[in-house]
Length: 619
Image (tube, rainbow, N blue to C red; front, side, top):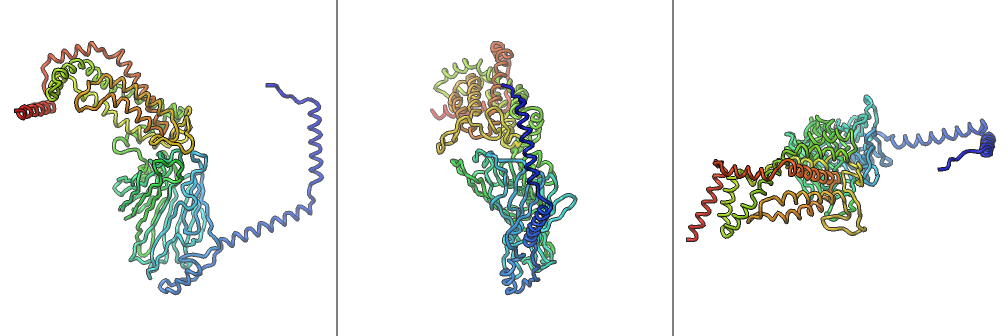
């Protein structure tokens, strides 16, 4: 590149321009009188703005209302709005820390906007969990003369204060200065959890204790991810019982339940959650979930709608319920900070031992690797280590297949000899296996032992918040599908999608070659057994369709995992196992007397009985 230099003429020109600018600035400098006049004008503007602000917040004290007098109630509703202050307009108060911004409206005293400050959606828009009326929250109760009130319609008076660096917002719907319903929010610095209290004062006898008081919380999940079908699959209403049992509503269809003794409710939106937890259990709640995503939907803006109607109890005629709001990521590293509430249990790690492996082994192990390596490389390294750890199981499986391959000629002879008698062929085949010390099930046991690992990893990738929006090679987000070709707008292949992902193609090819290596050594086709060659071609094809809309991190894992497994099997075949030695060992085993175990004895007896019954039937 040519290097640019200033010559002497350029320097003289810049000096002259700079001098002219100084001269113009000096000539346009305001006089002292002009500065004073400008200052007075600014003060007038600020005073007017301050007066307007005071008029918005300053609300006249209402008179005490006799809730036994229906006329007084009617007048009260018409003049100051049922059970609250009149307000010139709806206004919001903001609670904000380093992580989340909450906007609380004076109408209803409820959260009308919840924004994640450090995260954006797939199209770079800030992550909103509450926005534009997609959520509502309020109490439904009746007065002593059976008039029903909903706090969503009431105007609350906001009051901000500070408590040890915590922001405290008190929202009060007043009947009188000493009689009110209060919502109290307390936000701590650098914390997603917000303390929330509902309490009443002086309303003993005003609230009808004979009718139930319901807290109703609704939310319609806003789309956050590139694939709404994939996001919706992990979007669910989850709740925790007093006994620690975690339950969920349906992920794919509308559902509703009535439950008791609930510790928290989670409206999970895949990688983000809106959670309401309580210090004193909710005694009873009616829960419902409505699915908005059809299988062919690609552009839907919402996933599911949630609705919870929670029954609250009066204490001495007054309301007092201590709770917490959580608006934040569905991240185990974050939710584990709230162990006393058990919020990390809302993450779908999987059930039983599978979930335990995912949560306590793979999740922390991957977190450790990703602190030292890029996220995609960390997946490759974790896959290599997992496959090496499982290599003894792979060896057992391949050894079983090698033994079956050695016995294949003898099994074929039995098949030809007893081709007209399937029962006798099966009996003789089992005898051959027993003499040779080979079990046709021995190849299945290693596969069964790998199932917990397989399923735990299958659940790890969709639930790992660490993978969200992390790029690797051509994939721009390891928590979503990768795209090498986007079909024209409006075109989509049923069950496949509107795009082509490369990682699933690579994984399917690797699975195909792996099955060729393993299926080709299996025992010959037996009556009643599935056609293994058909499965060999079907499985990769199904995987191609299945994973096209799944997380690219998962497809990357299966691709690398199958490549490593193929490599391990080639090493075992060429350098560890010897077909001649296996054949000699089998022949030696045939000469040894074999003692039947209980299962083998029972199977032999059953087959002999069946054969005898068959002969008797022919007579």
